[in-house]
Image 1 (spheres, helix red, strand yellow):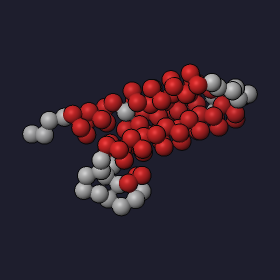
Image 2: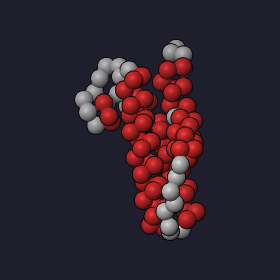
Image 3: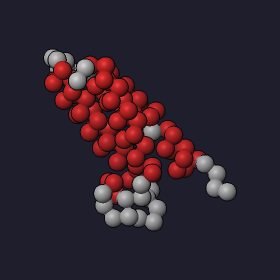
Image 4: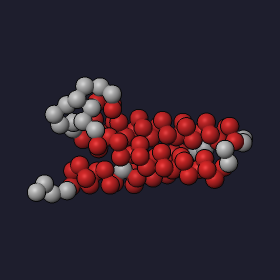
Length: 99
């Protein structure tokens, strides 16, 4: 797998994973279905999925080359980017008008 393909695949996976909590009523995407899952559960799922995608990125980086140590600014950018990716799902679930 080339580096470009790995980067595009990871970005696409992050985009899908960031929106999953807003399109599912199941707890942690596998648990029992709830009538209405609260925003707290959705944020917890979002953080868990962010950690999983970041771990996958680290694995890809280690497989394709040398893994570099990261400081706190890297993680702040990753979380902010993940929250930006989650915006369409948030709008669809919480801000759209029901007609």
